[in-house]
Length: 398
Image (cartoon, rainbow, N blue to C red; front, side):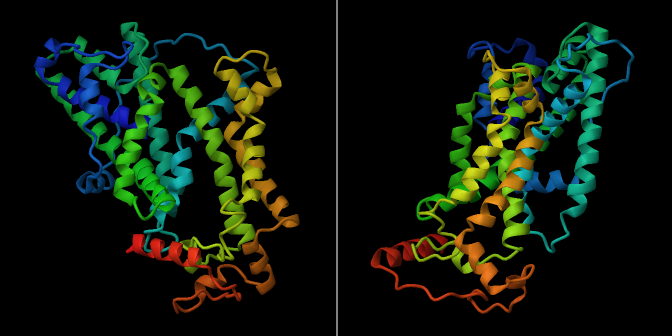
């Protein structure tokens, strides 16, 4: 949330810079020379919801590129060979998409059919992201080589263009590019951060927190990661992406293993929002899925020393650093394989029920809607505490 929020503020600032008065704008407030006054204003002007922007974003995709050039860039020192460098780049790329990969069910659940999101996920997103990144890299490389700069942020690039070409035509082009970036960042923030966080946090305390309140909570918490520091340089940003993806990859591996292998696609809706101790499907161990927790910790443990080394820690071997280059793929694979192995010898109560009933793939979803799950097991009488918790949960959902 923090990074797209700050990027959105920068794009908004670039829109205002397109007007001639921006040259006389006073830097009235600075935070460690990284957060300007105009940036601060636009960071705090982020709306919680904007249906019009969401609709426009889905309708219009833009690509902004500059002239191609053959200006040489400085040589990059590669540790461990080009192969490990490529893996590190792949890991950073996966980190950039880690949030969308993990939270896409929060959006895809509104699809008209199960294959509605397939084309966008398999074809549109990879192609559009690759083209946008390639044009950005080539355009920035051309500008840096021509003007002797070391830019990497799109808003810095727009400022540099305006410094060299400050006519009305250039300002109008900058305004259009920044406006489209603003809409893009806003739509991404809604889809990738606000909706998933709002959905998840509403489950923690549903009586007092709904999805919209979750929007404001995540907007407030986004300041805690000081996104203007993360975006201060390309090296810091790629390190953040690599480390962030490392922690998200294990979650994806466990989710896939649970749904496709262990539960065979069977979900029990009447128990999803049941907080009572008698919830036989999703209560686990006092609310904790210990099998998943173990698989998660092991998944992030292998590349974690290399992640610590990337933050400046000493004493980490080259092997540990290279495991970090495999970060997302390694964490994902380890958790994907380990979770089913743990559950094979120590299954959850929900998995035991599915095995005992011999449910086939998504059999529970094919049953007629009766208000009850297809699979039922005799439960013990609920306590007054359970009844009160269930009433509170139902009241919150209403």
